Image (cartoon, rainbow, N blue to C red; front, side, top):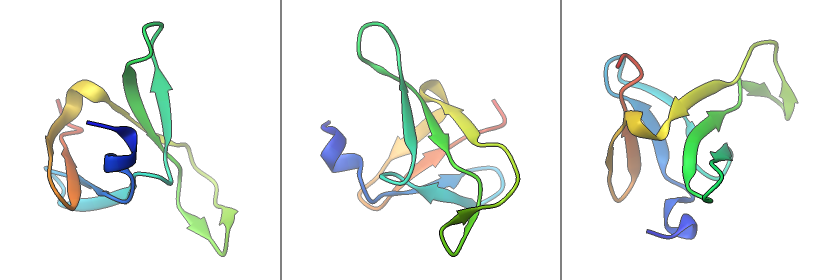
Length: 77
């Protein structure tokens, strides 16, 4: 799968049924081999300004399913 195919998909937490963000507005963490290690989802934004809070880090191993419209993650692993 190409990175361009992931862009625009919503990231949803399986346990809380909560929307975490959209791929394309997240940062990616890579390992030494160039593989994606984790998704870094920024904290909530308000009119383009970042509110207080830390980013949500989703390890690649916590991704349950990548569908046509969304990425389902399990943050409680």
